Length: 451
Ligand code: ADP
Ligand code: MG
Image: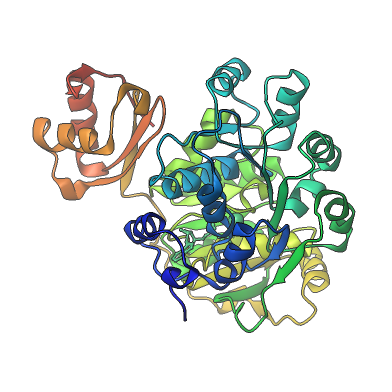
């Protein structure tokens, strides 16, 4: 096994990686980083959770010119949430450089604000195809100096009908750019896109040997999917579970059903407002709402720590979607569990996706009827973030020192540009809420909401 040191990276890059807890490159990182540094075009396929983001982001950031005024890299991803996640990872990896600006550009948020931040200058732009094209048509996005184009989850963007948008954007990028494609799945039809976008690409496909993925799959034949879902949760007793449905309507029905039974549930689908989408995902990831019922909006790229079970309430239409859905667990060399609940139609579908499956009986499980997956924490939203120079430590300070909350009862703290969120044990949530409402963070009065 090699370490990042063996990739002859500059010492400041190595020490930043060490600070971030990255010691040994994953197989895809080992294979992709050097060719990307050398400037080659790449089409890379590696399993879910294998560190593809760092594989493209590390060399990209290494090559950024700190004195360039215009954006140098464009990263296109299928969803807003994934764009946000990629941007966050890039920011961490760029900590060792001065003044690298990474901005996200996607729908459902203010266009004017995005224009303003684009005008201020950015080094890396991460976004979804539709909104990127929108900016391009308005001439609010400078693409002339883009040196690197990255398509993450490219095959998904084709499925979503974004091929034309992407091609239009790409045809307006400099011809001498570098282009990189990353996904865990490449259906054949993607050739159409890759031939136009990539120049003499190196294909990096991980051998199945190194690709062994530790996700245990169970397929159950069931009569009543609602009942079976509860049986599965009460049998396996996960900490965090994602439940996938095929439609937005179904996510709402299933969420409601689970809530009525006493489970704490977050719902994620494309009908929600963008702030709701963000807050749902955040409350799932910080454990306030430990079940996420979602459409395939959540199936691509999202990296949420500690998701120990993925449940297919509906069987997906495509085998790629199956791969990506279950890939939300068992990430970064951890193990995971994937459950599929199949009624008669579901059995037919799963056999199309996986020819060799063992179908088990849900009635063989032993549910603990007293297990209700509930969050031990609640989330408080704070009306201030990075722009007001608020950091996690400041929030922690106010909660512990001023309000007198025990450090151990405070969970994840997320600080964004305008808002921050803090997870707090339910036993002291009221005290924390009232304390923050009447108190100050860094000497400033702030607004607080109890989500
Ligand atoms: P993929 O895009 O292949 O599905 P991600 O890039 O989202 O995977 O990475 C999955 C997880 O692995 C992330 O939590 C990331 O922080 C972690 N990770 C990535 N590279 C390494 C590494 N070299 N060592 C340890 N953890 C890593
Ligand atoms: Mg990814």
